Length: 167
Image (cartoon, rainbow, N blue to C red; front, side, top):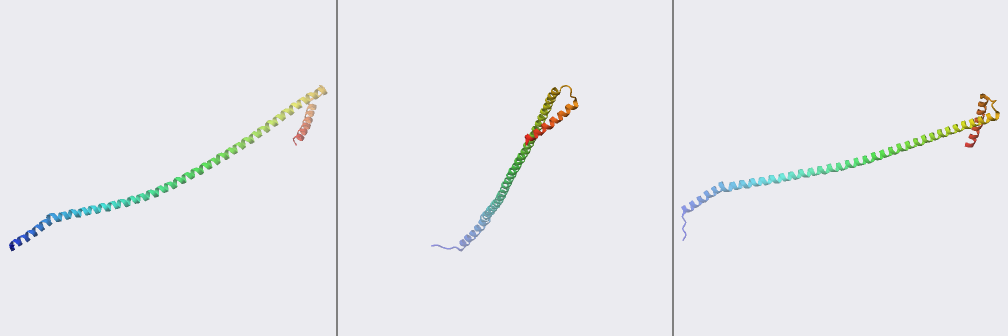
């Protein structure tokens, strides 16, 4: 049969209490401390990761905002460049038109001057021929005053004829 020895039971209980206290002091508390440190480390890592994620999202939003601003600014610059190019094209075309009109007017003036000069040369040649013919007809008895009067009269009649032809 089984006999119970009280002292044996007390020693066993005391041994168990001592063992429990020793295990608690040297095993359970350090293990709990390590577990708690690990939990804190994991918690800190997770909160750090969340904070880093939030910062990354904030940076992403800032970059997206910046990129959209840059795109809008690029479009504005492109539009300004197009407008400036169009204005420059218009200015150059206007200058070219003015220059060509000025050249045409200068050419017309030059042509008119050449025509006037040619008419003047023809009139003087005709007058010289008329004087020479009149001098032969009249003979050598005419003087310079008479020649000049004949010349002026011829020019007057030639001018009237020329004016009626232009109308």
